Image 1 (tube, rainbow, N blue to C red):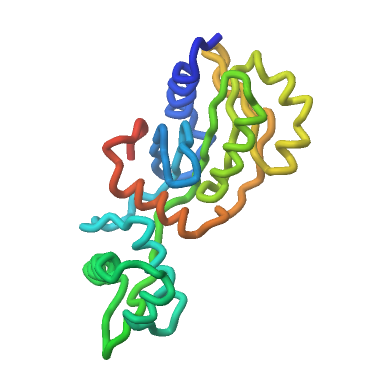
Image 2 (image 1 turned 180 degrees about the vertical axis):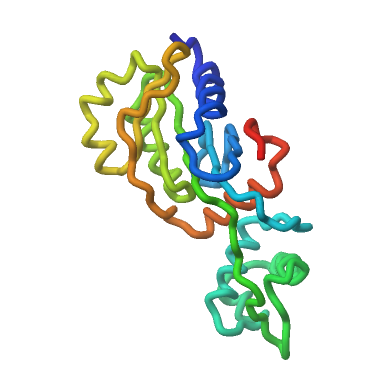
Length: 222
């Protein structure tokens, strides 16, 4: 029996650090309380290749959005960017300088062009909403994590999974996984969702940026 959600989260992270079957990838990193703008996921486990080159600039979500815009256009001027994004010129200029510095973007003859495509190192990602009892609320929150994660789960104490299992059709409908956790028996997967591409490619990029630049906050190592 867990006395708090923090105890539950701590147990989940310990179990996931030792369970090599839950996340695919040559390397794993586990983050807690991860906020990418679509709710705060209690635990996010990332499988990744350790083949990414060092970078100087951490791309914020605006940088990612601007990079996606330039990648999708044959060419774009500064005026075009101002018109499309409705953002301050200084903010746009700072973002463009970072993208040029990282050689994602090049400026020629008054226009910006994509110089290289953004490539992430993610091979798998699982986002988890941990709750002691309120599985319906957890399901709603976990669904939001599908914006950036390949799989999303609700984790509950094993003794509180009876009613959710009676409503397993809801987890199947939204393709959100369900698992029970106990200190004695570890993690028991009660419904495994199918792997889906994250709803937002930009949010996946944001997750990769977090991996690159927030590695010192991870609980699992490279």
